[in-house]
Image (tube, rainbow over the protein chains, first blue to last red):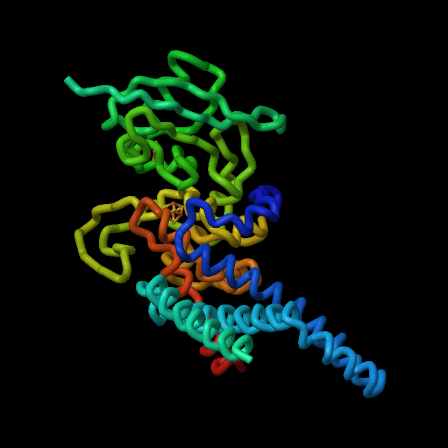
Length: 128
Length: 237
Ligand code: SF4
Ligand code: FES
């Protein structure tokens, strides 16, 4: 069947939500947060690698990540994990026929939960 | 006497893989006419080189699908009034995720051959009513299947946008509707480019002009595939 290929769109269009419905927002958010979390995993492993370089190198690194820019980065990781995880619940449920006709409402409820949790974590992190 | 609307049609043009561009056509048109009527008028009176596809004019052949202001529509049943206003514009583009033959016409052979591969029946006996399990017995009468193979769902699907190998919502819905999961159909749908590639964006159901609800059928197909795998695991000799 590959003799009649469909024509996939350019990469940038994957992230273009114009004229699309809520489901595309869910898809785009899941892609962006998935890519972000994968990138974070690599950074995290590099950070753990600092442990092997002795206490001084590790302490220096910890001092660096206490910088507000890094705190914002950490908050982004928490936000990505919440959005990806909660939307994952929607995908998992609907994939097995649960809540198909209510998938939009499910998305709105789960993303509202994510927003509340993100605000809570932001408050906790920046209040001190 | 109907008041005519002044509407600008922004029409996508592309020939032989050349760079694409838009042409602008000004029309005074009855807003209760359909977008396809406007396109035909442009072709008839202004530009005979404009290429587009259509046949039945009543949402049965599935040939006239296009993007109207960025959204997949059957242009033969989309009224001008519903997509613009007096003095407004209508942007017409070909469906996404299919190769462009010329201007607004795309090559949907991939869809047709895949539909055939999953055994989609375009005509069904009425007793095999395929809208979500309603079974009626009406003697020997036949009906057209709900899916008119218009390709709107594939154009709207963000997964089809990322890979040409994904067989797409209409085909998966066709496999679900076919009923029996023969080994050939199972191989096609129980694969990384089959039912498991759907990421629940539901754009297919959003744009489908017929009574198919492809997203629901994809999820139903998954259930069938799992049931099939389970039973074949336990009946294996
Ligand atoms: S499932 Fe709906 S949108 Fe897709 S090809 Fe069939 S009729 Fe068109
Ligand atoms: S012309 Fe046949 S569906 Fe529109």
